[in-house]
Length: 158
Image (tube, rainbow, N blue to C red):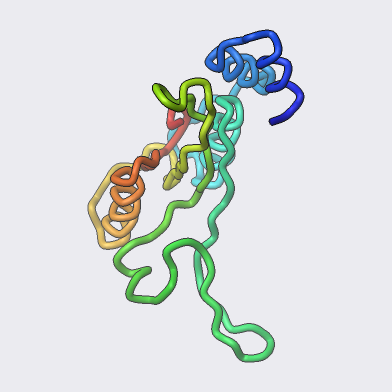
């Protein structure tokens, strides 16, 4: 528990109000609007900024494989245990956590909900190719386990 949370508890501030206060403290900048044709890297930056403004944190999840200086083959990134796994399920570009206030027996406790976003260039449309289907398999898995996952191509994605 940090000092702000201790203060909120000491003065009996409702957890929802505390979460809103934290988000407002972070949200001092506006996300610049995206425009059609923006590169994926520009959309990715905007999505990360929007996430931070909403009290979430997202980090880049680079996925790939290489050989190190000793000749060892290394796979990196989530859900990249093997080529077969990576062909059938591709983890999202951004992974992170969002604060959630829970009800009933956990009333007032903030938990972290796993979240991820598969970032696409501005104006992207689903075509259903093999890569998009593998990305959707990851998104469906995360959502089925209570996470928050989706494709995104601009602001309003969090």
